[in-house]
Image (tube, rainbow over all chains, first blue to last red; front, side):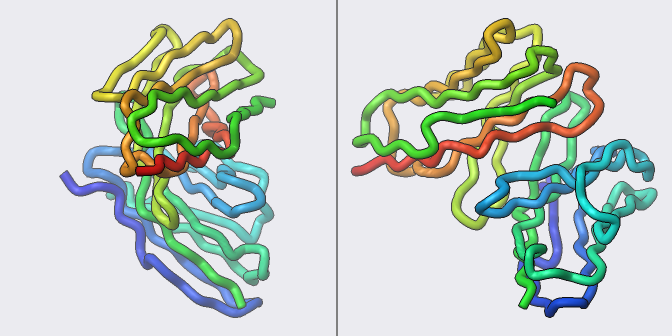
Amino acid sequence: KAGVTQTPRYLIKTRGQQVTLSCSPISGHRSVSWYQQTPGQGLQFLFEYFSETQRNKGNFPGRFSGRQFSNSRSEMNVSTLELGDSALYLCASKSGENIQYFGAGTRLSVL
Amino acid sequence: KQEVTQIPAALSVPEGENLVLNCSFTDSAIYNLQWFRQDPGKGLTSLLLIQSSQREQTSGRLNASLDKSSGRSTLYIAASQPGDSATYLCAVRPGSNAGKSTFGDGTTLTVKP
């Protein structure tokens, strides 16, 4: 069974640009969560989607948005990038037993 | 608001030692607690999940315990190996099973050969 797949693995953008990250969950998993990880703030929850509906949202500005498709794949978008958005963005899908499985992450660098 | 603390932030031990990593949480109304391992620059790998009704879970050389009433979980690693070197994080899911998981900042473990 394939794991959680995140693309791209690395991304370099400049301030003011926008970016879209993709996450394909484990087959059969309907819940997808996104996290931002930085050295100073640790792992911070962005949002969770279940069956194409946003179920929970963390304390991030409206520049951060996401969506989930009918095949459970999810995308996260960040508009008007800031230097502080540089981070490792992790996606996790959740099994029916409530075990979270993480992807390898997308490393975003904003210059 | 749930807060999760992991102490120590870093730990260095010689190969072969048994060790314990700690995770404390402020709100005991949890649904489950999950331990993860993260290698530098990589994603998180699930190690063990303990449901709120359970006291411990074991997988190979790893044993995780949960004491909800005191807001504590421990991860015991037996006969540590250099390959165990990584950052270990615990995550707590709220009692309603809705809402975000709250993560600790992790304990970075170094096992010296």
